[in-house]
Length: 475
Image (tube, rainbow, N blue to C red; front, side, top):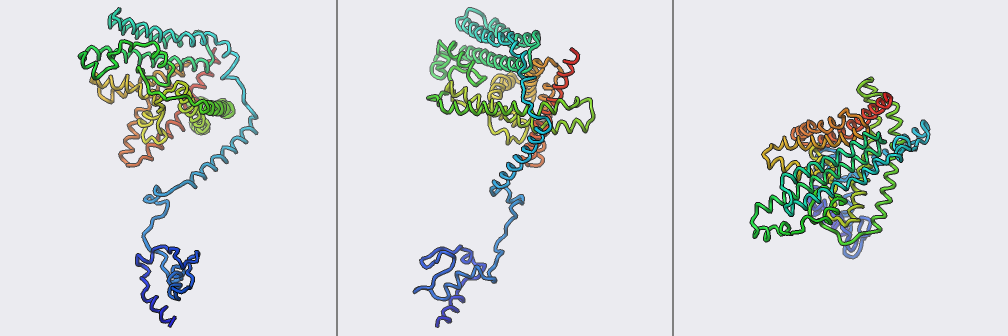
């Protein structure tokens, strides 16, 4: 009888391809927890055969259509955390070998030298110039105050702002060239002067636009729709001081503010800032300096040798650039924002996922991007210029200030930085074309990393280094 009941159970069991057969075994009241079934009062031999059928040799193994994990249709549908861990392990191993090889070949090369020489301590004219730069924002405030009370005409206001903004750049340039300062001191002063110039332009342009808007709108509309324009105190010295130290380049009367300052968080960020700044210095002194000292001018030597030097320099340069981005855009700007309770902390976006060069420039430096859009790009469009021309003007201005920031401290005017920035325009066209042609975001992202980080930055470093060294030899 038991054998008969077992045969009937097998006869009633579904086919292997039935959806009922593909269900995973559920732990029922009679389940022994190991996929089998205990024989009890309510189960016979047929139940045991049914539960163990999936383990039998006659059970089907291939039941549905499936893709390989690395196929194009399935590669993005699963996690690759293991491969990421492998890349990290390989990266640590390769760089660990390079560190040991470098120490065995050169020893420990950490020194002051080129960056912090005794000459840097004697650059007191640059210190005086840096301390006196706030005179220009004070002059801009005085100009706006006189314009508010209509003591001077609008054309005179514009002329005074032009003089102040130009003087805020030409004054540091003159001091750096006149006193032949150290490279790092000159770069720091020039970087600070460009920030002051950008803030003065935004301050003058914003206040000018407020005056134009207040004149073109009826007083009732101003009071109802633009109450900030009806405020008699909109030229405020307090708002200017806050703007000059805030981590933004775009002026406005009020900014979103946080409720309090997280002191413990600030200390934690400062510690990380010190650590990563030291890491940058270590990479520069231990790796970048020996490579560039043992190189030739990339445009005057053997082509293969120049390519080898550029590729060898690309990795430590990339590390320094990433550390610089993390230290300045994430750590320093967030520390400053926290101390000032500045609320809008979108200092960058996920630029590392940029599919085109154009997208990268819109995401990696948000303070400059917002300034360019507000004070250069949109005014060009409002004056009837095409988008392409407005884009060219924005890149041209960016190229000029990149060149000033590098060439003036080095006192070498070869326009390498200018050419590098203007070269981004054909790269924008190329990456957009490739993205539209292949319908693949990976192509543009790889071209961005290749031209911008692997080839562009090491080439500029070699060019400027050899030009600086040649200048010193001639002197």
